Length: 394
Ligand code: SF4
Ligand code: SF4
Image (cartoon, rainbow, N blue to C red):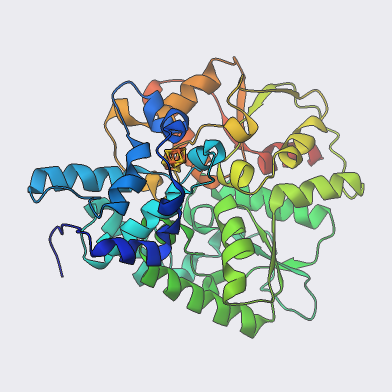
């Protein structure tokens, strides 16, 4: 089916059933609107507090006019799932889940932005949002002597995420991570061409059937390989394997790479020695920080590096970090210049005067690097793994 649809009162129950049950809790206090980063942009007035009420009335898309529907649809798909609103909401309403429930229905009717359709389709057809062939998924590991996972000899699977597996720049993060794991003596392997995207982004965008395809593919591969522990570079893979896959494959435990690096430090398995004479600001990815509570481990790793001076974005750090704009497929959206969360966050970061921007998420890496290019500012963005590896290198 194609074309735009109008939601009506009958659809309300469908939204609740699709995961939007939090709409019942909202009492329209408006705190979410003050917390939502889109409203930090002068060009926008993103009325988040109205979503729940409109859904309860069955009027999430209120008009039958195509133009008005298009505006409402943009608003439904604008949310990046950062959970700043949930953190401030006195009733614990997850607007990202509520909007995901609406998106599921819109996606079902093929009524969603064309740039997102392209990514969903690429992911379905190739197993990754970039549309790259699965045969080259392990190319990043060429020359590193990383083995295919074998449960008899390996404790962990290292799952690099689609972006570091294929993107030439982000590959360096996967390579640094693999080298650190080797230095720490971790027995690990990769799934290589058997890997399929974890599916987090397609689930966020509402393409639930494609998410289920990803789960089916991955869990069959996990079961065949006898895998139970996975290390991730992306916070998005981390939260998905940790919180969502156990419903389908209960023999799985996930760690984000920074958690493991911090453990290596305290167990003295690795010790950074080479000085890193730079002032570094750490950007908390929404998914790793606010959503998964991993705030200190990346900082502990950075603080353990000789001569590295770690600074913070004033106020907007840890649970108050601002989204880079890459969540819920924001990485593949093309917003006008004055509607880019990445610009807002990059400006906050640049005001700190840091010489290096440290990240712990491939989406943040890509969003900041692209934004700095458009701003004509030459400041390196590095993953925590890259900085750590530099300090370990002989
Ligand atoms: S903060 Fe929570 S209760 Fe208040 S309007 Fe937003 S969703 Fe509703
Ligand atoms: S999850 Fe983030 S982007 Fe979405 S409505 Fe809440 S604060 Fe705004």
